[in-house]
Length: 346
Image (tube, rainbow, N blue to C red):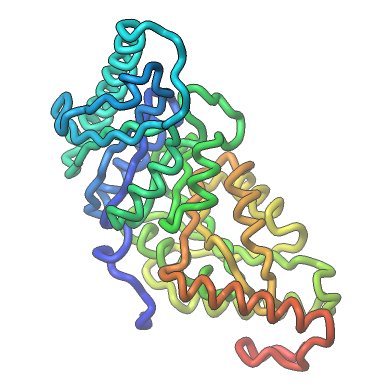
């Protein structure tokens, strides 16, 4: 194994689990419990009380630290209050808090029953997505695990909170779907640094869960008008390089052609994979600088859990974006005669 391979104490060490009383939230909790037991992770359960303040008094109400034995933070909106009587507004606010306390308590009980170290947090804020993103960054969490939609959304695909978090969080995000355990992992690769980092996450996950892994490279036909033989050779080399890093895991490799997002989803469905692990942005051997849009599509429409792995640093992410722009400009002119990274003549 090379120096790039991560240890279990560096990823998946701290997991943030936003929770409510929805079924997707329960699926996320159960998947987190499965992972945390295998990876010796510490979990923090987070619930956001996100109702709008109902009276001027409610807007400025102080919630004491430790309310209901939970750490509580108050960040309420400065929006105009409604004309509800203060007693009614207070009763409604208290109902929201009690409901939040129960959601957190139920989740904490699930993790404790599995012997998983767990913290708990209740935060009052009108924007749940913003709160989750800030909490993940402030607490230096390794991954956010959440359901695909919330209690009041009932979205068939991706709910608004999950969408905002998956799109804007600097932390890796796992959107949980259906499967509560992991035994088959699909890893799209394209030769980029971000895809490489996602591969390292997948390797650790596969080893600790004894899961099978499939590496997938999708040839996007016609992007740079390369000969089919060339793109196939590039894909085979990328798959081979990725496979060389993997030991002790039952491994398969697939080279497909077509639309990347649709092909990844179709492969995941056909192979009945439990989770797709991929980078948030990639720049492959032929400069597929739009992979960010691929991950967006997959996290919206795949009916499998999806782990989107973020670049480790802003500097690395910026490097990849700049590299993609340069490759895009270059592609409008002429293609290099050889890609030295893969030894393939173009």
